[in-house]
Length: 284
Length: 335
Image (cartoon, rainbow over all chains, first blue to last red; front, side, top):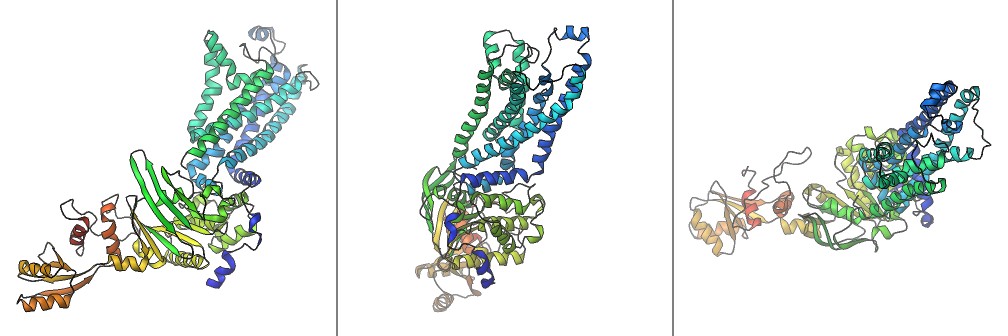
């Protein structure tokens, strides 16, 4: 047995110095972790399906009623930019993608995997930033595929109603690209919040409260301070850079697009930076 | 080489590890022995930089674990059986951890073969038995071909073959000059595997010695004596420098004097003896005697795979704990 073990326990020759912890190594590790869980693929597919489905429904609805005067009266005579109908799935798609961002870290806490991860990367920062990088790349692909398919699916309906979306317009790429950027930033915010809270349910609850519950509720309150706070919430900051029409903004005052982008970036980066600090101080 | 200096860990007001100093040397298997809740796992987690010490420090191969360039090449740890995502296969789990250090796929296959996981390596780890989980944990520990191995209760849940395999593996790795630090709450396991033993109880180091010395030092030899004239004999042997305790059924337990001496003394003083039996306490008893006072959970809860815990709780009394235990550990008659 000894001879057998001897030939097998040790694999290092003279080349051990090559095998050390690197950021690139941490990134490939996180990529392997992400792609080897079924939940990743379900959530990614769910995000795409939801983006496309909502784009389909809203473009079908609006194209059907575009000429209806009653409908026009209801919407205050305003109209969406047709590309905003293409990206209308973002409001729900962000939530599904946020689940992916949360799970990337909370499933390690709940399963105990985090101890294996931290034993391999006792500094822990490489893990946090590698997760962020891999999540961002996956989210870009998921969001871009989702938005591209949404465009393809919505186009026939919109073209039929003489609302064919124009990719050459001044704001076209701001709307489409903005949707992708917003989805990626939301996923990163979810990762940061998940790392801070260490709980899947707690993190998802927080994100739903922040992006779904708070904006409409604060929107009802007629107070300068509350209105300002509302502008700075991640969902409204996102609206500021990825919509152009008054209708899409829901009638509330928004930041300038560039400001909105910066605020949305801050919502992604600040929780991650805080998570990177806190995760090093906590016992695993 | 693991060196702990003044290492302490508090959780709120509870002290889990209390100002502990020890060195774990390379080239041998060091057992880390203590009852459940004694601070073994907390100590091991601090070595691995998973938990931050409240005071003191611990280094591995001269540096804190987190300061090494190749942590997996310094220490491989089995900290608990299932530090793994249940939805991921054993193979992918190992691949992901190997990737952090650019450890080649060939090494992943190697540790899978070494731990006998080939047939289940591609299955989801969530379905693994405790024994399979332990094997995967050991495979994870071996991944970086580390100089130091930390194994927390490695034989838990293993079948007899697996237990034997872990013992041989631990001894073999030590024979290669590696540091092997292995915890257990079973004295018998440590006696069979380790060269050196560190005993911990209630967060304090109770003993730190070669296993052979520990056994010799702790297994106090006693003689069981039955006589109708117990009071007189007790006086006589005490006068001869021995200590005497009496058990419930009137028998005397003498230590510090062997059976021929007691017999001669009794004959010379014309005290009738009905029984004179040398008793050697087993290793398990030695361990129980040492840790009885520091057992966290006093009731024997009949955990499977654990031998019945003889006479766990010395009644708080004026006697010293060691004497109290010796009195109570009487063929299990205390309970």
